[in-house]
Length: 127
Image 1 (cartoon, helix red, strand yellow):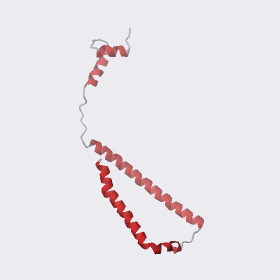
Image 2 (tube, one colour):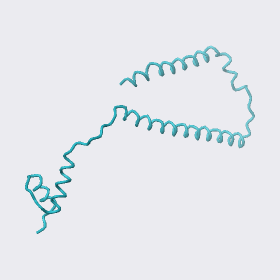
Image 3 (tube, one colour):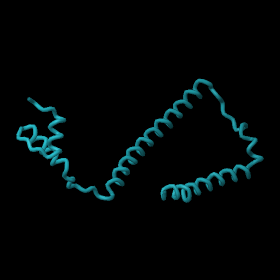
Image 4 (tube, helix red, strand yellow):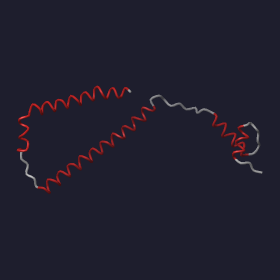
């Protein structure tokens, strides 16, 4: 009578010796599974894997950025061709009275970008 795999496994785990080929095969498998692997992963291994993933994502981000810029340029050209707009600088005359505000706005945005890069992102990377 042929034993089921579960019965054979239980016999081997309980230390009952069996002489069949299946039992010897199971015993070899169990012995191999009990041994700890001999390989060791170096400490910077995970850092290298993450760096590779980030590098691939960065390339993909630049590719999508290029595609987006190309589509914006194509859309602008098509829009200008279809609408036949004649550009004048009269649209921007309202800004001439607020030059100080425009300069302050640009300087404030640059300051916020610098603070974000130097302070906030460093704190996030530390955690």
